[in-house]
Length: 413
Length: 88
Image 1 (cartoon, each protein chain N blue to C red):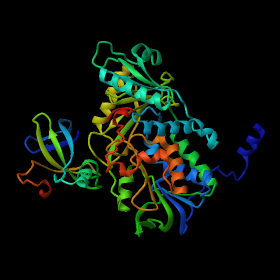
Image 2 (image 1 turned 180 degrees about the horizontal axis):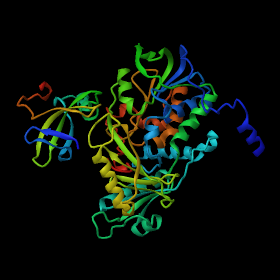
Image 3 (image 1 turned 180 degrees about the vertical axis):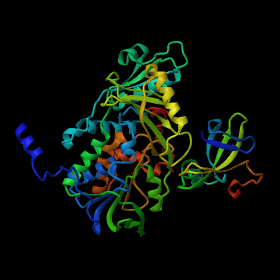
Image 4 (image 1 turned 120 degrees about the vertical axis):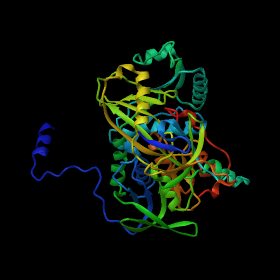
């Protein structure tokens, strides 16, 4: 094997290995057009082509592959939500991550290290008890733990006994973990492309032709195409794309900011968050401490960063781990989240017959990459919304059947 | 530091202000209009009229802000007119 490797490396006219083919010319017609080349769109393309035999598929991406919120999120995978339909949905999401590297033959570096959310008040402990009991009822591993157990799980956390943010206990979620975001997107892209899915980067949707309640054509900056079915999975641009299709969505855009420190030796082996402090900390496999938090305090569709929000993230991080005070920040960034009134996504049918929605992911789309792709592919292939997606329909707002998950965010918004 | 201009107190640091959300027309009489008001908040890729509060002086006012550039274009107190929608 080493000789083979040497020969491969020294061969003349060496051609670099490509995971996905270069962007081809647009054809005139596709059975399915997916708007958005992020994790969700690529996962849907994978499941359509590999599990449902739908291979005439185009993924249209305005920028580069997985360069939007797939690249900007903080890669938390968990299922400890508040309402039973959400827990059931995200439980399936976590189980897909557990099997993802095997399924794709592509190492997504899923590391199931457990997530701990800290409570600094009696009210937080009460809400965690509710989440733990609901979670156990639906069948996920989640439990309420006391301060002593918090210290055992994470000896580095500042318990702040007698202080303003004293740690009273926490919600321990053994199923929680983290995965490599680029690998997830590229793994799905590679296996979808192998089956003939075309991935069109730098292809921006500019409008739709609509007749008799159907999308008849999709207009892009590289030409107009016709489509049998259209799936919208455009992350922060979901509101804008739906508007082009004449569908008002209950979505508002808020920036979500994050940053990472210089790499440190491994010491933090769990995912640590605090809703009171609007902050969470994870140590990446490179050793950097990833610091994330709540969204900006006001509506905006921009990926600029702001000093007050970065200061707030740093304040929370220093409260939890004061010894980070002289560690340098290496990178910082922001993404545009598409937030719904109940913080739950909108999946399934739209007012148009052949147009499907995968939108409103707000601050937690990454953990649903596999399950949203799988279930949206099933929806498109069969023309029927599966039971697990029914509670997430767009019509829930007009029926006042909201799935309130605002209290289940990792950081509080 | 980002500066916002309070109609009463002049230019102040953005940290002194609280965002209160978009201005609605206030005519939510039918069920459909109520759903629209509660859940379908405006999210324009352009200028939005919204309520803000200068917290130290408790001054509630209207700001016009560009949601792409974050530029604050105008700030003013709520006019006497009953119908907020008619405010130009």
